[in-house]
Length: 419
Image 1 (cartoon, one colour):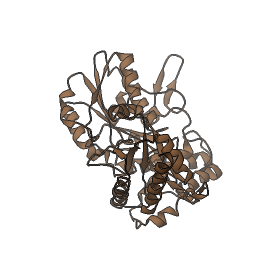
Image 2: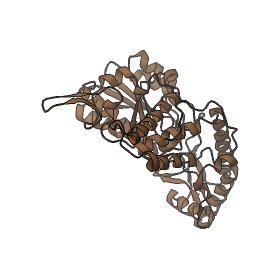
Image 3: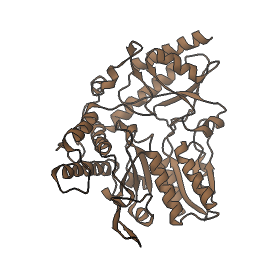
């Protein structure tokens, strides 16, 4: 059995970016004959060896379905999987491991919550749901579907020209019809870090629950759900150096017990007859069918890996990257950064006069540099800033100042080519 401890590491590693880079095998890949410069971490992060090996170990030593078998492999797999659930519980400081629902990612987590809210009768005709202007499509479309089904209304908190929430306009939006606030912690296209704790306090003063989309926050800052007092929180494993196809919906027990199941099938039932089905307790109630067992195990190992560092060291490193990249990029004539909030994570969206973002992405790829171009699943933000798309560089624990220099020189090359 893979030797895992439920408790996350208490002894912290020294934060040395060159040593960290050795943990990520993909960083040795050459692209077009040049060293890979991977700065698309807001889309997905790379995986350390320990995560890759943990999933390989499951498939080569423990491969069996979980929760059902009495034989050795099934019990070993179940223990590894449930150990990962406990690691998630500790990582975000949930009250109980039963509040941790494994899903495919943030998108499924929000769809689960919105669908269950819809089926529960908690949202009726004329009720209102509040989101913000900077939401990812995954935190817009599911709530729009709820509004269409239940004849409810979607209300949107506006943002400033700097890409900050106009918080003074938030509280007046809340009324007796408001049933939930679903808000992004950190914007994937602007980098803005929202004042989540304050938003939750305001909503709770009016008795309104809050769902937090932490997909772009979980890898950059320490999140404590009890300190935030959020009612729900979602994140994806692949954003925090874990596998794709696995994520988490955290929900306070009192809410999750009230909500009906999202899907039906095996492992989420207590009894089934043709006349009636009764459902299992949390978390099984929301986990129908065979899950992504290897992914769940890999997520637990990824959280253990990231917990081996002090989050202060991670934030300090990423702050240096953000400040240096901002300074170097603004030296380029015609470059404009979209999203200049005072409180930002290590994400820079930008446009350059006379160059389409897709052309920028293509040219820098020739130099082995991976960035993101497009609307980043935030079309309302693009409309708000009157651009069709941006190029985006986003940084992680393994990125260096030298990589930023390579990126800036590649941007200069693109400008020279197209102009």
